[in-house]
Length: 254
Image (cartoon, rainbow, N blue to C red):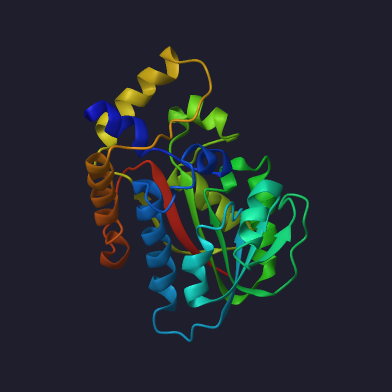
């Protein structure tokens, strides 16, 4: 039981995993909990605002985040995966087909820009952060999630084409260098972290081949893991500082 919790808790899913899960992303615990995390992050800033924000979602993948973001205004996706874009277009979302590392965003244009598990895929994340900063309106917000702890970088990261993992200190320095003011910065996926940390370090040196760890789960296990992660989503409103976790999430302001 513990092994399967370890195996599935630290997953980032993109188009490869979407296909592997046979389009069950709305049922998988990680997707469900992450959707609530994303909603809570935007709701933390926009709860009492008019829901007419212009929001850019960089690395929107298969569009699973767009249905959350559209609750806060007009949402535009940006991605360069043509297969994923076809899925988004069927949902009638506006999409920019581009590589964010090569695409110059409009100056002072968006109320909010989101990068959920995207920065680790970029060769030069610092340049992209500067691009995002200049594209936000004054007092605009940047919402993001990233995988934590470079020491955990292993086969799944390589399979997903990650360049790095992050610490709070590391991303804080990059955000401040780009010009951002930090509103919120915390860890997520922390409850099982001590056990997961040990197991993943062992796997890193034993299992050399690259592979996805995403699988279709037993219904009961899926529900258990969802409840664990979803409980941590409440920490956004409680302002509870978390000392460690498998994901770093944050809100930064221009």
